[in-house]
Length: 345
Picture 1 (tube, rainbow, N blue to C red):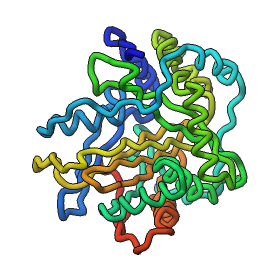
Picture 2 (cartoon, rainbow, N blue to C red):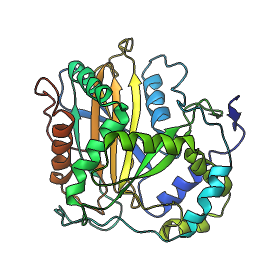
Picture 3 (cartoon, one colour):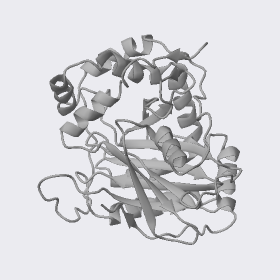
Picture 4 (cartoon, rainbow, N blue to C red):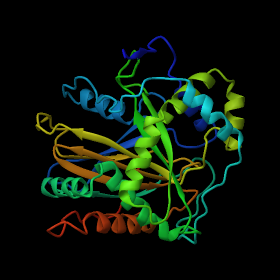
């Protein structure tokens, strides 16, 4: 089916992020650059009102002089439809249950005014380790995304109020190739909402993700954005404040921006090296985990909303568990030993 063209319409996600921003929450995301041989991160902040993750990274590379052609396209074949949105309406009318956490270190107090930068942790794998991690996922019979998400969930679960609960996660879905907008870096992302049960097998998680994609659940959110973009700002604010803008209150968001420049053709000075990406955190999803592979090296990050904690020890502890689980079956001990990093102003 030919891709649907919505070039003449306003970005349906932009007004929702504007509403989120008007409530004092984050509407930006960050990319971190590590120059060769450096441990100092250079941060680039972009507005989510204008870009999604893939679009923001491509924009930044192009601004730095790199030639970036067609952006990554949607991998799943399901075509645009309004039926998933119609099926999701009853869940939008039902009650929400927020994720309950155990006792976490609180960290420095949050002063009045704007939110502080979220605390975060990151790791960067070598090319050899990146290849080995893909091999472990392949041997397990799952995608790299399932492999990463399952171990992430296991790493955070011990600090929930009920570690035996089914944990809700949001997974963004790139719609490029099915939806074309005037600017290829604009928001083209929808999402699926999943729940991971304690002890759920990796293959079961893999099947659940693809069952939801086969049902077209990623089109439910996109059509929801489209149907509601013209609501008055006051209505959007009301829905957000009363937890009615999403079908579930998520523990967090997990996103993977994919594989970039495996050929190592990008050699501009300000672009060479390694890249990190920080997933947006919101009060309705207070943990953000993100991955990207640039020039053969995988980076992973965890970012935490200050309403949950401002202690950098929390994401670092989760990161140590995550790396430990990911690398447990690697033939060699990983060298991805980097310190805690906080996002500077």
